[in-house]
Every structure is written in structure tokens, then in C-alpha cells.
Image (cartoon, rainbow over all chains, first blue to last red; front, side, top):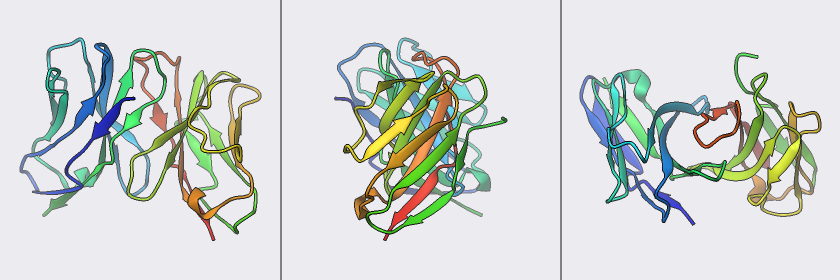
Length: 114
Length: 115
């Protein structure tokens, strides 16, 4: 079974600085999808960024970018120019090419300090 | 609607009571998912519908959990004879088609507390 690990239960970053959240996963599949979701206190899960495993180029969405290392099964999220609104739980998620459901990591709580 | 909605947002039940949680997916979305999120943890898959067909219920923790989507739109997750370990946030998500590339859109969840 696939597993997703996030080794940082909590992180903090100063406003306007850069922070990197770590994620590793375990799978025997070669084709799959990886996601980062943000969950603010309102509980609404919001898609931040996604990466297709067959693409070598790292995905980027404005201030958010990933470092996808397929061989190492690593998928970290970099947030640049952190804003107060970035404070939330961040979940890394895996989805294979056949199943419909996500496998989520345990999450990292990000605090942004003014 | 504009997004996935869930009701109620909060539910308190006494141990042994039955509860029903509702999910209204985005209009036109074929696929619907239920997840259980325990406090301080990531969501865990419960079940998946494509239209009215329940294609995967492998994540349902016991036969006390039952989900339905009779007309292929609104879905209800029912928990019979609730136990304290059922206390969690129940998240619903929908996606347009259900392919592996499809984005899932999540609702705000229902926080269930079993006393």
C-alpha cells in the first residue's frame, strides 16, 4: 500500500521569507500524481499545486513551487514571500493512475510570523 | 452550486445514536468521495461514488457506516450506533469526471462529536 510521510509536524516562517515543507512517499507504481493541499481553520481543503510523476519539470503556481525527486520519492513544497494568509495545515497527497482516492500524509502546521 | 457543501457543519451525538451527514457536490460532478479526518491527522478515504454507483467502499471502518447517492447527486453518509471513536471531521469531495487527473474539490466538512 502507498504511504505518505510528512516529517515536520509544525513549521514557522517569518512574513515575506521562504519556507520548505517536506514530503516523502512510498509506492511501487511508476505513474502517479502528487498534490499539496492547504487546510485553513475553516477546514476547507484547497488545492495548492499538483505534479504528474511522468513530468520532469517541477510544477509552479505563483509563490508555490515543488521540488519533485522521483528516484528519492520526495515531493517538497516551497512557499516564497510567505504571507499571513498562508498559515494553515498543509497536506501532501498521493494518487495513483488507477485508484480514485487520495492517500494523505499527516500534515504540517505552518505558522507565519508578522 | 459554487462549491461542495456539507451539512450540518457540527453534530453532537450521544453514544449509540444514529447520525446522517449530507454532502451536496458541485453541480454536474460525476464522482463523489467521503473521507474521515481524525483530530491532528490527514484525511482517510472511506468510499467513492461514480454517479449513483458506489464503486469502492473499502475504507468504511465497519458495517455501522453506510453511504448512498441514490440519484447521482446528493450523498448521505450514515453512521449507526455511534461510538466515541467515530468522532472526527467527515469530508466530502467531488470531481467532474473521476479520472486520475481530475481535481477533487472538498467541502468544509462535518465535525462529529460522540459523547
